[in-house]
Figure 1 (spheres, rainbow, N blue to C red):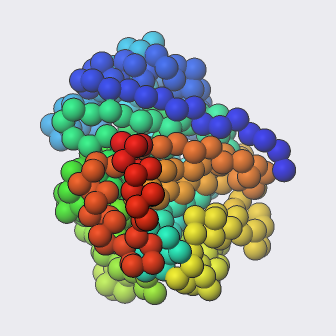
Figure 2: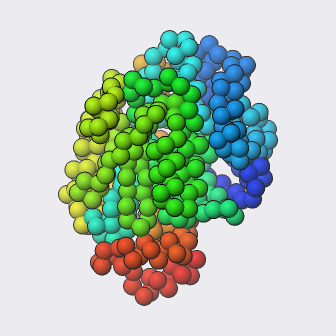
Figure 3: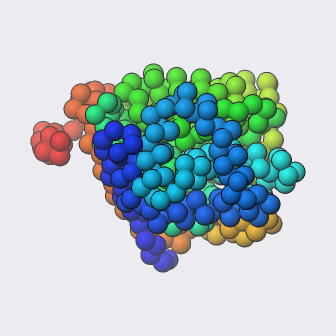
Length: 398
């Protein structure tokens, strides 16, 4: 095992443009590397800088209408990082732009954004707190082009998210106790229309004060391609949405947990659309089973360390739950870039970069709103309710 540098924490606040500029200034090097990673990929496809602007303009008019504040924040990021707006759009719409570029050139996709995620309800955990986490499988280079973003807000709950540098959000939770992770999915409905890029949807979900509002954003926002998004709340509930571009299919906990990899599970979804992703991620069929089996064996006693161990599973390596660096056919260097686990009710997130070769976690914290923490405590099974000393410690953290 080796030690890999932890993801830097970037803390921002204020109005959209101001917090964007602070983000760009603090993470300038990583943002530049993030942009270069995807601009370089487009270059290998035969597209130049003018094409980056062209692809960005496909999304910007709709984004200005749907989320003008987030476009303003991206403008701030661009200014702080000494880049143009199209470069920041490229990072935030990289899934959609790379797919459009491939389709324009007739290039097949050998590098789907994998991931294995899980949410364990309080009834199945030792401490009576919901646990949420995932392995993010993508480009190994992203271990050096990602950050943890903590946003202090005056118009809604604060939020903590792991994301690619320059990105608006990926995995994380907010001070209202709402958490989100996401997994690659693919169907025959993909890229018929232009929708809202996925980081914008995840960011809006993390800005929600109420769980119902986060559900609405994830389930009803039109998307360009399919995606799976797992939503949770510190109050002890979770629902998974297998999202086609124009429809979402809900999956509820089984045995007090949800585990999802990269294939469609909803019988309703499979009766209405065609799964097209398994040709690229056949390992999905055992990855989610392996994680579920490990967690189910610990039902009622699951800890955050148990989730980590499940996500460290190396069965059938290198195409395993925890993936070492693999050079794929098209030249892409793939890996489990990060393992992200969090307990929103405790206000903690732990992340290990490149976990197949590094087991060092860094802890990041976000204090829940008092009212949310009280509701989460009331929702705990009796065995997990905090003692008086714990309540005093949590109050001190606030």
